[in-house]
Amino acid sequence: MIELIDTSIVNVAISDMSASLGATIEDVAWVITAYAIANVIIIPMTSFLGGLFGRRNYYVFSILLFTAASFFCGNSHTLVELVFFRFMQGIGGGALLSTSQSILFDTFTIKERPMAAAIFGLGVVIGPTIGPTLGGWIVDTFTWPWIFFVNIPIGITAAILSWTYVKEPKHERKVGRIDWEGIVLLIVGVASLQYVLERGEKEDWFDSRTIVMLAVTSIISLTLFIWRELTTEHPVVELHVLKSRTLAFCAFLTFIIGFGLFSSVFIIPVFAQRLLGYTAMQTGLLLLPGAIVTLFVLPFVGKIQERGMPPQIMIFTGFALTAVYTFMLSRISLDAGWWTFFGPLVIRGIGLPLCFIPITTLAVSGLHPRDIPQGIALNNMMRQLGGSFGIAIVNTYLASRMAMNRVGMISHVTQYSEATQQRLNGLVQTFVSKGSTLAVAKQQALAALDGMVTRQVMVKSYLDIFVFVTIFFLVCLPLILTIRKGKSVPTAEMTAAH
Image (cartoon, rainbow, N blue to C red; front, side, top):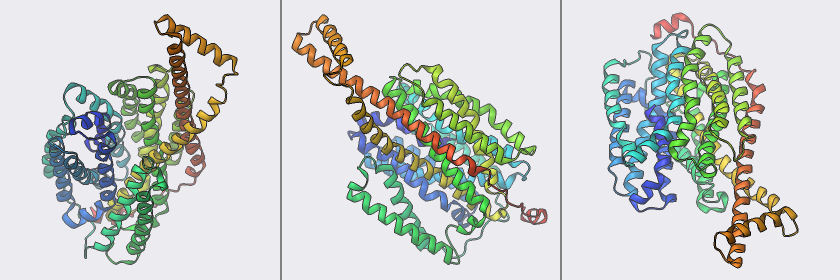
């Protein structure tokens, strides 16, 4: 949970960091970008690193690295220091989710896995949701370094308990020669891709030479990486696990969930704060009911899957509910209050567990125990990339829609429009009554009218985003019914593996 909280907790502290470090908002955004890049680099390598150093050793080391980096992030006095230690925090944090899931799937039997995944899913779903709330409260009550310091006691406790109770698996993948070429290609390819997705919209995409160069670098590096991993005897990422049609399809669905979840969760706080005037704390409280619903629904989903409910039906229902959630948000207006968001977010709170739990357990069904960590790592990487693609595409689509909607709206706001003239005259009279001269009042009225138009353009553009995400989920619904569960590993082989 603390790893996932740290993906979103920093967002609400950007302004305070900017003022404290004497850097621009755009420069401080590298604090977020560095963490995301480090996460995506390390996630696919977690299976390899666990086999190289021993899963427990690697897991505890990652917790300690995450904790130590949190301490140094909070004590950073320059932006360069903060970005560097934030990157190191991402290296440590990237290993936690996949390795934790591998430990769970190795510890529990196939029948017990849905409930274990449900309990574990509390952190996966609730972490990003409470991140902005917790961050807003910490920044308002203390100072921004404390968003990092809160990790320290939790991290130390987790390291001690993990060293005490986590055991090494007997069937862990053994590492022979280290595939340095594959590691370099993976780092260069994924880091370049993540940079393009994180910074592309801010740098005007392919009008930027840096973005073009990194996009080409990413394509070449990842192509060579895939060829390398499929042909070398000791790959750093076992891509052969994707021969499992179930895993490949579930990874695709996980990408879709990441796309829809991250983009919609990204848009709601922005909409609430920019247009409705919510504070960071109020925005966090807005998202809280959905997280509480998820808290109660997750164990129920684990239980019904244990009792034999077909995962395809559960995933289909989850996607359908998520589409309903985004469609309901596409109908809101500037008059929206807390209760307007309550219904859609509760529906999302029900739908997400129906997506996450079955997909997670279904993805590794049929994999040999030694391949489960790699399958989990690839599945988690797809969710992370889905989120990055989602936010990048949504930002670009939002900018495009705002330009188009403004052109369409301004065409109706002209000097020949009776409604426009009435509104201007009313505004002029208002400003005159407040003491402005007639000439000044006319200028103020025009500025106020432009502000109203801009506000309405932003509302319509944000609602267009929700429509876009709704269509995206609906298009995927028929594909879900084609999923087939992988054949379980024979019992004797599982017993021997344990």
